[in-house]
Image (cartoon, rainbow, N blue to C red):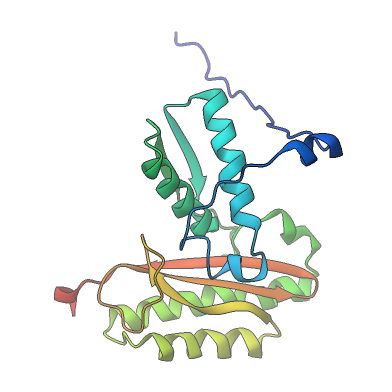
Length: 207
């Protein structure tokens, strides 16, 4: 009989001692990938992510690391950082997990009122419609963005960003879908900021 699998949970904590912060002089930045999307409203956030994850990798020396695709920009940034710094680590993107109603799972969901949660379903529903439209040949990114923006606005959401249909690897903003892209959205419902995305797999020969 095989022994049961065990899961080890470790919390990596950085000291909040002000003296330590004053002595910390080095930051790691992944240029281009940290710009746009979440980087617009949080311009120094990703340098912190890259620096802390690098410190963690140096201490733990893992064979692989798993990052959720819900934070798509973060996953791609870490993946590129590992490649550029020649870490012998495989960075895996785990598929997004959704609740039964389709809302992307998030710790912030508990702060949504029942009505706000119902409204927030417009994010996944509109992204799904955009993906289906693209697969049917509607590949103009502005038209797809307008579709999603209209649906979420009508549901009562306020945007952080929704203009980003980007290449899945470089995160370069696209005007027309001719290769695999991801449509990324961040919107507020009440005081809760929700992020979501939808991968769209289309290549030149598919249309």
